[in-house]
Image (cartoon, rainbow, N blue to C red; front, side, top):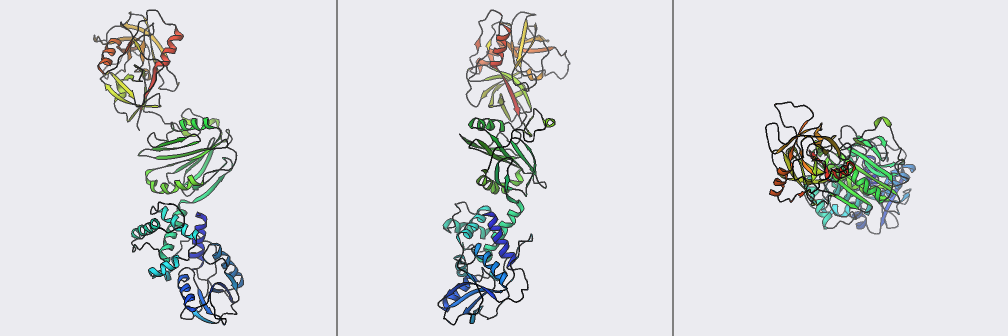
Length: 572
């Protein structure tokens, strides 16, 4: 419809109103004949604003004919084909030699005007026919009655594009369409009659054509991706393939990016893609998500950018697109997205998984050329009850727009003091294991270990760092602390400190001292007894360990992995 509308508009308004001298013109395009002069004059008034150089002749037979011209023979044939194809004249119009034409009754002044030659579209801006500007309401209704269904649908499409029409494109000018016409007229500073004059229809279509030209909406057929889609090539331009994506970067500073998605697969592939895309920097965590068995729509919203992803599964081909835009392009993209969604087609095999592979571009923080969203910081934590509540370091309670457990589950801070914080997941979790706290602080010089994520999640699973219990109090005699000798990393902070039986003897604390520098193998933990008292005050009933025998290393590693979680702090 878009290409047809542009062709109609450009041919009519650039061809018919461009002056040209045509020699030896004696051929006509006859469009209608009527038995009475009154009927012929009424139809001429209706046609007049729509088609230029309309003439009326009274034939000796008593009929009254309406014809366009005069032309040379070739131009007459071209005019007939163009106007008939675009629905501006009846299908049974034909080329006539004019020999049967008698007295001219239209135009009323009796002067035959020279018809301009139809020309190919030019990149200049079309103008509105000045002769149509004074059309009355009744004339507007009459000229509207000559519109074909496709022409009426084009007007509805243009009204919809500018936000005035929200119903179905059906070519029926009902109350909804009339209200949208009134809305457009009001916005344009015109009398809101609900009936567009010929000039107003031309103005609306001109605005629409110019908007489409700015966006450069074109049908993109990508045989490598096996996708066809109508895309805004005025805003984006192709950059590269990096399977399963075809990357289109911003054009001329538009700030808009487009990614075509194509890979072979099944419903499991759709599920995996749904999860992976939500880890990307270009898919902010806020925004609606709709997922079905064979596809999904994923929208991410943040102050800096918004993205929307549409993915479908058809006959083993997982295909779709992602559009990314800044806030300044929101109104434009709201009009583009429905066209992209409606035009998305699978036209061939999925993209080869090796397409665009470049060993030099590999990075753990990239997924096929797209940045993985990274948290501000990540620390460790551990489950303290069967509902999924997590104990972690107090530093995670402040300055975070959002907290997650294992980067998947949103969590809220329900308690925090100067060293620890208690988190509650927004959805109930079912931990494989929860902490069992030690009854006593432990023996001096005994082996202890902390479970955590020393590299803030890069390794993907919790690991154990070993050390010894050096003192049952802090350096200044704080009875709530244990002093440890171990070389822990910042990412380990908040992790559980185990004794040799696998009981949790404490929680590893962050080094918050700003006035002293301690040896790197000095660390502190808050004692289990103090932790359990705090948990009880918050309505959590902590488990207490009854183990007395040392736990095997493999069993301790498994227990640590089952109960230790990655706690992440995000800017959005």
